[in-house]
Image (cartoon, rainbow, N blue to C red):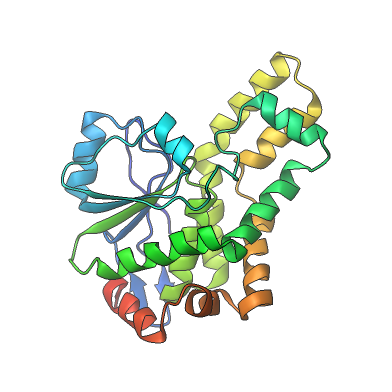
Length: 260
């Protein structure tokens, strides 16, 4: 179940409600994932306010946030939690810089797989997700939503969504389906960018690299699961041991975000 929140100037903004777990169903109007909020129209901001967004978590790097600051949602408290000190996901990289990196030998796919491992292993990333979980835990009001986002709403946000859904008890295949749903909202942009690159005579290496960086890929998120199993045994144990999120807090999170 994918519930898109239609906005004029923001893509891939989705409510995570509706997913089934052994202990209930994820509530709507409690947790929302999204992409950049830098171009929100006045009507978009009003719509998100009316939707109940009371907290906005920005996972972008300092340079991304500086170059394209979020448009403020009235009454929403903002949290700046950069997952990385710089944009490892390459969401804001220029074609010229991307080509330079690809020519140095590492494929775009390999770069992205490395990023998804870093979500588990990098201390900066762990601190951001640790604070994110505490924000979710403090969201005790009904019909009040935490909106979390990065630039494309794909990698840092995608992993954040996977983590939350895992702690709520959603099965892994359903989590993967939610993660891959991002491609429905990015396909047109990817097609336009690759077509423009081809038209300008870009080398095939760059064209393929653009697509690999911009798509959600099952192999990417699976790398996070693999790293979590290697270091902690599971993604849930990553939250417990890596982020210090206790069994009691997981239970409290489920009480807040699940309905029978």
